[in-house]
Length: 150
Image 1: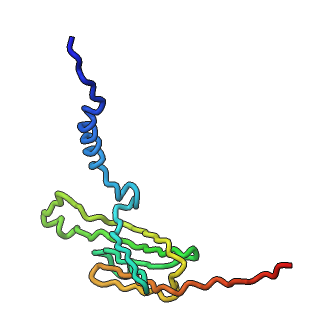
Image 2: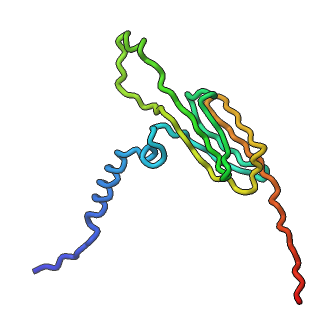
Image 3: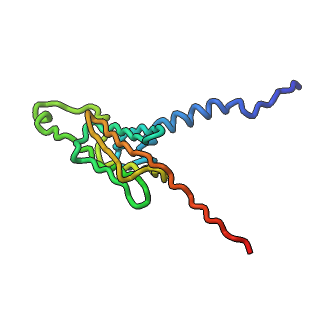
C-alpha cells in the first residue's frame, strides 16, 4: 500500500473561480447602492480651504438636479435621468439590440464634517459634471472655564 499525501485545498482554486464567475453576473452597484439603475460616479477631495465633490451626471438636465444640506449636516444630491423617446426611430425600422445606459432617479448622501461652512456652498453644472464646493471654516475654539477649588 502506498501513502498518498492529503491536500485539503486542492480543489479550492476551482471553487474560487466558480464563485467569482457567479458573482460577476450580479451588478453590485444596482443591488447595494440604488435600485433605480442609475447611480452617478462621485469624486470627493479636499484641501486646506475646501471640500470638492464632483458627480458625473451626463445626460441629465440642470433642472432635474437638486443639491441640499439637511439639518443633520448631510449633503444630498437628488435627480432624475430620463429615458429619451425613441418612437420616431422605431417606426423607421430601427431595433435596439442592446441598451446599456441606465435611467431613473438617483439619491446620493454624504455626511459633512463639522468644520464645513454650510452657508457658503457653491454648485456648478457644466458638460455633464456637477461640481459642489464647500468652504471650510475655522473650528470653534473650546472655552476653558477655570473652576476655583475650595
